[in-house]
Amino acid sequence: VIDVQNKYLPMMSQEDQDKALEMMNWSIWLFRQYELPVIRVYHTSKEWGPEPGSKDFAFPDSLKVLETDPMIIKTYGSAFNKTELDSLLQANEINTLFLCGLSSTGCVLATYFDAGNYDYTKFMIKDALLGPDADYTNTVEQIFDAISLNNVNVILDLAKDK
Image 1 (cartoon, rainbow, N blue to C red):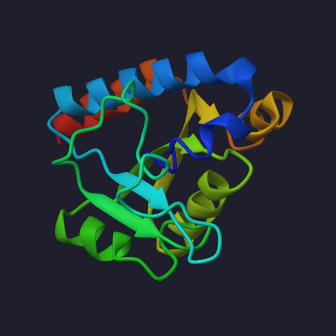
Image 2 (cartoon, helix red, strand yellow):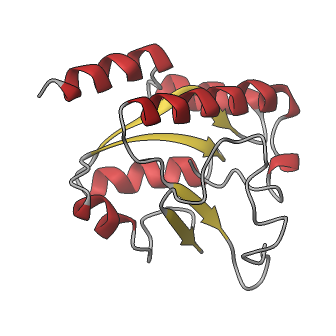
Image 3 (cartoon, rainbow, N blue to C red):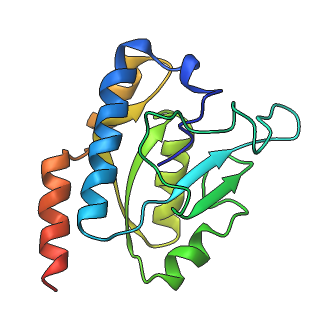
C-alpha cells in the first residue's frame, strides 16, 4: 500500500478517492485472509515532508492498515530506491507484489518498474490506484493490465495450493 498519506490524498482525483480507498481496504482484507503481509510504504523528504509521526505523514483512519504491518519509509519515487524493501521481501520469501496506492502516475508506477528490475512478478490492483487525474489513472491501469480483486483472489488461491 503505497503513499496513501493524509498530505497527498487531497492532491488526488476526488472522483477516484472513495472507490480507490474501498478497493484498497478490500485488498488488505483479502491478503489478511490468506495470512499474507500487507506492507505500508510512506514517502517523506527533508525539503517537502511530511514529517514522520505527523498527521500529514499518517494514512487516513479509514484505511485498514495495522501498526504491526511492515513499514517502509522512502525518499524517492520507487519503494525500492535506497530502502530495505528488497531485503524485507527476500527475508519473507516473497516473489510477487500486488501494488495499490498513489500516485498511479508516480510512485506506484516507479515501484512497479523497479520491481521488475529486482525480478519480482508484479501487478497493479485495478480500482485501488489513485492519481491527480482519474483519466491518467485509467490509462495506467489499461496499459499495465491492472488486475481485478477477483483475479487477485484467484492467483492467491492457486498459490496457496503450491
